[in-house]
Length: 356
Image (cartoon, rainbow, N blue to C red; front, side, top):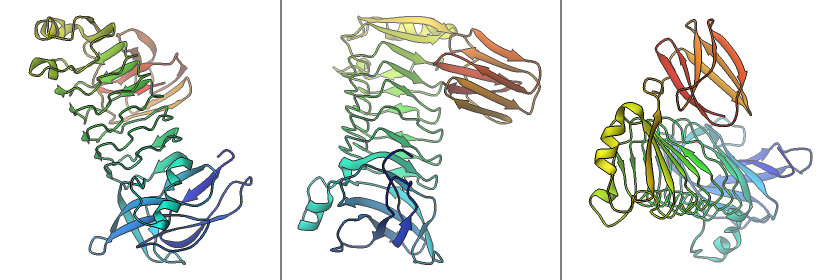
């Protein structure tokens, strides 16, 4: 866990079990405000009909960094007999504190260095982690459907984000100026990319767009370090360059756009000569037939540079994104080590895109 407090959010009063390096720490989730000193808390908006809750407004009066953990079930009674399910987490930051207590508690955003969100959460609301400048990592819920506008704007220490399959929308400015992120890998479920949603990420170098992408607005503008865009779609997505005086990708960088071999002509005909694309080179180096992402009967585990694959079918192949066969076996189990990068694991008619 490291040398910081691990805070488990729960309703009413509960004790979180911490590492040996720290003391036990009491926190609460509640309706309204209290005058208690030296604690962390979040507000809850509970729908009593569905027994589902929305969490907001992180309050913290200590000065030690901590890891924020939101479980899938949260207690509403001291003995744990009454619970609710968190479905949404939103504006945790007090951007405009309205009273003396909010002024005191707003510093919570300064001390969260990691966040783990339970799989029951389907929405990360607008401004949820806005200006959490010390947040370095976040574990996204597997059931996540929406990331709101400015949800992670100015999270300048955030180094990596894994966007889960099933994510359907990412709002404007959602990751604006997340300057420590170097790559984004997008799930098949995300088909459109909104205004400035990933813009201004100064150190972003690589993005991987799925075969389902259909539209890209000025989503990656001002990403001045971007060098490589991998697009798995065989139909070129619509760019904002086609209709407006704007650019989907930064116009003043030497950009290589990697596309499927079979679709090169379509990309060239649609994108060549577009305004703000003068410095972009379209390269047909993604091999056809290894770019789909499925997981039925295929289990893939990664740890550092180690890759472990189990399949219900016999025969496993691992390809680089350019179609080079990196590892294979004739049985249903494969373990190997590979350089950092993105790979396609295929067995029978099932394939899965993974990152090391």
